[in-house]
Length: 385
Image 1 (cartoon, rainbow, N blue to C red):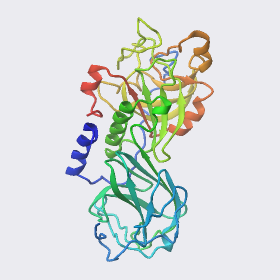
Image 2: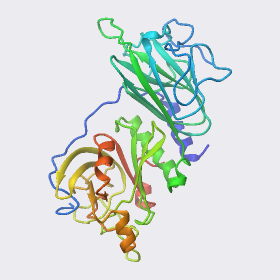
Image 3: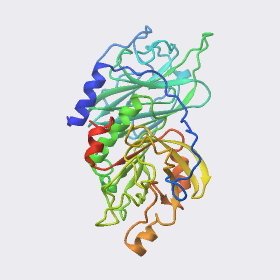
């Protein structure tokens, strides 16, 4: 096992529970300036008495395949990822789990559907759920034991995991009046490994660290979404060095050029950034993990505010008005004409023809992570091993 994952799993093993459902609204912080122009601005089932989990009425899963020769009755076995399935807990007779260690006070005694997932290598397993008409929840288990709950949520659950066998349980919440909120749902499972996007230029060591950072933020309830944007500032601006990954779909949904701040530009080569800060007026890019917040329209058009999650590293980005916005100088055509990308005042500016689609996919609770092997950053960041 690689050292990064080993360190994380040691922490997980000591406390495998999660505080409960994902929730929370981003803070707007009160900033009004724009940022890119005018300011810098084998196990027994758990409690419940059932002897085997049910199948939710499905005789075969949806996209991705689902049956293996040793798959037990009443379990949907996932044999390839990414995976999608439409199910209905009303068609299940299984009630193996009445509650989970992840949320012991939540009544999940309604019918459930159980999925078995075998991971061939280390990576982040994401389970995203959309329920159509009632209230079903998703749980990630290390075994068929409700006390072995790794994560759970109303719509999403996930964790950075070593290779092995896991279970995803879509279970029915029961309200205070005893009414079972069983119903239809769509489930998406994705498994992202460090080497998945090397063909798109995303270095496996960078993605490995990025998944580690995402997992820590996810388990701390600091992120609401599986859309995750990574910037590798060790690459030149002539490269498309920003990737937005949908962890549940196991896919890159945006791959763009991104500008660095003019104060971050290398004196030797403007294509590269080599200095970063959290200081107002520096016109430098900030490193580390940030959370997307609200949108607005300013001097640079449609824009997206960011909130830094790392004290002393990027927690001033809102006050500095470091935002995601479009720019005419952040396009492939600019690179073709000038041999480099233009610089911002510290904002991660992208192609103005792509910015609206990007913002629509990441606004309001997704993570933005900027990477560079800066010694101070490596030593201070609480999201790195």
